[in-house]
Image (tube, rainbow over all chains, first blue to last red; front, side, top):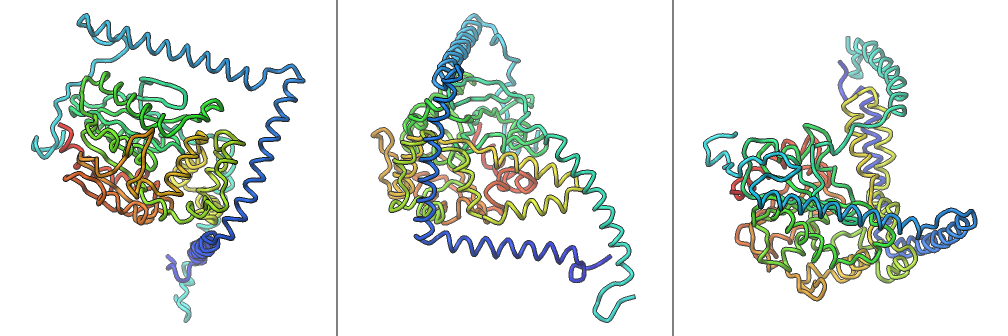
Length: 126
Length: 360
């Protein structure tokens, strides 16, 4: 068996680890400067503006192809969400009605009792 | 026989043979890697209790014959998916809690849709969390609830607890939760108010794109992604390593967009004015001072957290008004604190002993 000092694979791994630490440390120092913040935000602002313009252009292109616009798709999604919400509310009401009449919730397995004590009190783990 | 330099010559053929075998395995497993998907994550059985836009409330099915009286509501960070706390059986924090007899709910987030760009901090703190708390009360039949907040989920839980000191909240657990945003030095510099025009960004893009959030995280350790890929290649013969890599890589890159108005408030109130730390924070006109929180609190921080450095989190316990409060620092990083092999050994048992005693 080889030791870590003479094992070329271990040496390589160590070198990669040291390079990672060194580069991260160097980059962190550079990124803490106001100059970095200024440059990054200038580039980021331009990219965000370009992304917005591209999005608007894409929407017009889709419309020209007689495809549904994002607004229409969002509208459908909203309606679906509303239907989901109403189904949830109906299920919740059914559960309440079932519980009020002495039954268990319509779609739930029986719940275990809330009687558990911590192991320190009950003298051991359960 | 040993050479004068200390090199064990007898071991060299054995080492070469092992490396050749690994090289062959790398080729085979490398093909497998690209032709298969990773392990299924977040598979602990659960029911969707409620869903509204970006918000989902799950109830996990109990796994024990009896459970603690007080249910637990986990509040996930808004930047990432909740399955980091429910990776795979044996490495799932949620499964651990269930097996220890807790009744577990999770407030998780999905990507806000374009029309949700107007969601404000008020929606998260004064609407989503109280709504989920009410639903947990109704579902469990219990008035008391323990909250567990991870990262920014911890910040939201702190804001909720500060504004609603009467709760319902019996216990509060925060994982790696920042309150002094000046000490998040790189994020602070990225969002320097002299150069970062948050209004222009939000007004132009609506929701802040996930690529931007992911880039910000990756820039904290710019070499680490490349190095992790080199390490993956070296270890691709090792199924356990690959499984773990795929789980964490998938989660880390599955970043969520942030609702525009919400991001604007985070930037202005927290990053720029550090209002939570300065006791000047308010949400929807309601004061949120940490000293208002009087319930038992446990704050778990990671020794090597590069996302939320200890300096950004260390004042939380001192500023909380509770008499029963504890900070625990554990080895690990921002993610390995709560998920993975280290968490199984360190954080989870600590949390269980602390919370179990306060859940009856």
